[in-house]
Image (tube, rainbow, N blue to C red):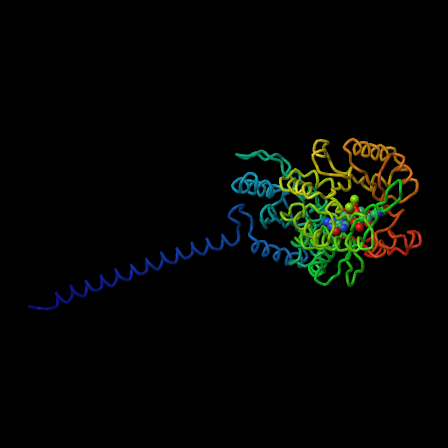
Length: 490
Ligand code: C2E
Ligand code: MG
Ligand code: MG
């Protein structure tokens, strides 16, 4: 019997088997390559687009900017970046929850998309902040900024809220306002300057904005070390009894001897210290130093009160009153000789912790003074409940006393109010004899201002109070900030 048919059948079987294996492997390879393709497409899309808003991611946006720069450098029109920040987005997010916040962001990105043409690109930078890049110069950027502002003010109706949004917009143009890598940052700087002026508007980037921010950063850095380097000094300005003309108290006003800038006033660095959490240690130093100086005056036989300005941040510290009490004890000063000056706006804060601090001040027996009175919105009921012993008429009214009937009416009303509540009234910022005479005729109890004395170092005040030298003879070191440091940080 021939073996050939059997061999042929086995060969055929083997060939079929090999073909099957080959086809199966090819199929698997193709499936893998399709899956790999899908996967990389997904990864790429995720990289380029923000899942929440569908706008470009930061890296996608940077790439879009680079592309626009190449086009512009090749001679096509310029382009600009709009940095759009929702005002109060954080508040809405906290109040209504993140889900509502997300819906809001999606709605905003939809509206932004409608304000620009197809050549524009957008990016959701961070919660409530977007950047747009569009073809055209500053004029076009301004027109689009107006359109965006209008589009966002249309009421938003979501499941849980019906709200109206406002936004602050900064505009930076390429190449006038910096390199591609700086454009978003510069537009954001312009946006911040809008926010600082109250928001709800737009403005074009100005290189000065960057200078102010850098100066602020440098000053903050210096401020962090100022206490350790012993660069602070307390100046004191006397409060004078309107009838006897005796010094009743001395208000401590902080000064910073900056190694390069010279003498800097508190209006510049106190807000910075408050904003960046440095007011705590600085405030503690002021309290301790004011008590030390008051102790020295007592040793010399002087009995005037020492007044310290207390910021809103300090009023929220749990241990503020304990600290003051222990500083007073250490220096042998009675609590009623310590005046805590708290501005009217802080005094009227209805927060539990601020009111608790007031209660503790009452129990400790401090002399509480409401500073800058007349600028806030005091309710009579709230004022009556405060443990205040003194109201200080704000300088703005004193300044206008001689020219403005309104200012005279306000000063008169504050004095009447204080009389009704059994409080003493101090007028701050008295600069002229005319202002002094008007205030005295209205029944103001105490006066404070350049007419009597500038703020001065403790030893000069000591000499003045003891009567060694009369104020007119003194060479007061001018302590006002504007004379030593020109320019104001926002
Ligand atoms: P303030 O407590 O209302 O102090 C009065 C300000 O008016 C002081 O400015 C004082 O130098 C100035 N002044 C006094 N008399 C006159 C005058 O006749 N004419 C004019 N034009 N100005 C006068 P200063 O020292 O620059 O202080 C500004 C503010 O900084 C203070 O306002 C107070 O709110 C705050 N401050 C000062 N020292 C401290 C401090 O140690 N801690 C805190 N938290 N704030 C302080
Ligand atoms: Mg004050
Ligand atoms: Mg004041």
